[in-house]
Image 1 (tube, one colour):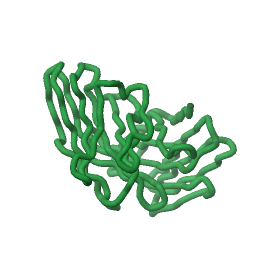
Image 2 (tube, each protein chain N blue to C red):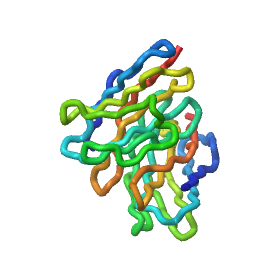
Image 3 (cartoon, rainbow over the protein chains, first blue to last red):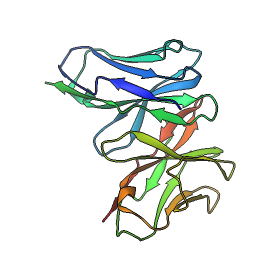
Image 4 (cartoon, each protein chain N blue to C red):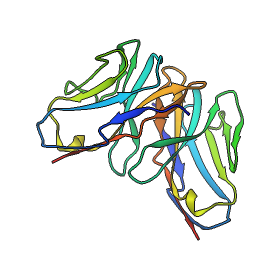
Length: 112
Length: 112
């Protein structure tokens, strides 16, 4: 069974600082890995999708890396803004059935 | 990113009552999933639906749960006799663009 762990559980930084969010998973036989953003009481917004054959994906200030052999992914958010405050979820897609296994998330607070 | 629409956004029901949660996924997709998130916990897989049949279900998806595609486009998740522990956010999701997922905005179910 795939286990996904996210560290840290919470993070508070001043505006402008870069953010580093970590995700680890136990089974390296993955199909893909997806990072989501979740605002309180809201749904999941997809940020980045990395296929198992890829090493990284970038979108604007966001960059996600994937090291499948070591079971790790890192989400970098450059020059953080108060609007980046949210919970960030890492989800690993199974190569067998494509269903996602989620981490518990990292709750980010960016102070103005 | 295409949209997945869920209704209602919030449902309050008495314990023992039946509830039906509805989802309109991305059109023409054969794969369809339901996930749930109990407050403060991880997002967890409930059931996957492929080509009008259940393809996999989790341990959570017991006989009280059922999923249907009543009219060829909408999907429903029915809970026959709700329990307090069924209180959660319920999300439907479909894959898009290289098998990443799009999630609906969710239905918050509160069982009292």
